[in-house]
Structures are given as C-alpha cells and as structure tokens.
Length: 186
Ligand SMILES: [Zn+2]
Ligand SMILES: [Zn+2]
Image (cartoon, rainbow, N blue to C red; front, side):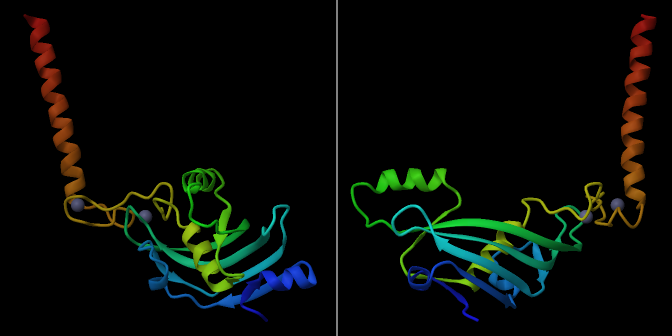
C-alpha cells in the first residue's frame, strides 16, 4: 500500500483510496502536551477538485494518546477519531500577487499548497495529531490542579496549606465584618 497520495495516479486512474498505520514518536510532534501516542491509522479518499490542479482529500485519523493535563500535570488517556477535509492546490509562483495569495490562505483553513505531486501520508498523520491537541488539555473539566504552595495534586490529597489559605481569607473577612460593625456603632 502506497504511503503517499499521488496526484498523477488520480489524473490517470481517477479517485484513489489510501490506508496506512504509522508509529509516531511524541518527539516528532513538537507538542509538549503529548506524553505518549499509539499507532495512527489514516484512511483517505482523494480525487480531483473543481479548480485546475486542485485535489480534495477526505478521510479519518484514529489513534490513542496520553495528553498531559495543563492543571495537574498528570498524563491522561485520549481516544481520538478525527475526520478531515483538505484541498490541495498548486503552490502559486512568487510574484506581485503574493499579498493576495496570503489573504486567501488565511481565509481558507482547509487549503494546503503543494509543490510536489505527492503528499506523504505520514506527514499527514503527524499533522492530524497536532491538530487534535487542545490549547489547554484537562484530565477532567473539574480537575483541581496542584497546590500553588506545596505542589500536592489536589485531586488525590488535601494538603494542610490549602486549608490555611482558606483560614486566612476567612480571617480577613472576619476583620472586615468587625470593622463594619464598629463603624455602625459610631
Ligand atoms: Zn488534571
Ligand atoms: Zn499544599
């Protein structure tokens, strides 16, 4: 099975389907939030698009991974099944129109410009994992995070410093109340 989407094959034989499984190391992803990643299964159907030189790829990426929680810094398991739709267009020659091209690229997020007539499915798999990582990964929406004072994971243990912080706040509130009560008396 080919590990590249080949545009010449599509021209010659019509729509093509591809399927491949890739082992990807977390270090290849350039995302510190990914602690571990399992094999990635990519399935793609690619065909000619309506524009000259345009090709359209539809498919899915399926994998499991461990993301690092942004609050408690513990890894947690994720099962991803993401669908993608990408339009490949020939990379335009650099010219006076360059500015215009940049605007178009920013507006159309699913467009990728190609220089070679084949696209690596492995690079595609890496991109799909990168896109699946949230800005702030959370093991749970209600994750309590780490104690800013002693670093204890509050999901697992209630440390003493957290109660003393509450005590201090409560104490401050008591002080305000007493002050208010005194002002009333005057
Ligand atoms: Zn967490
Ligand atoms: Zn603490």
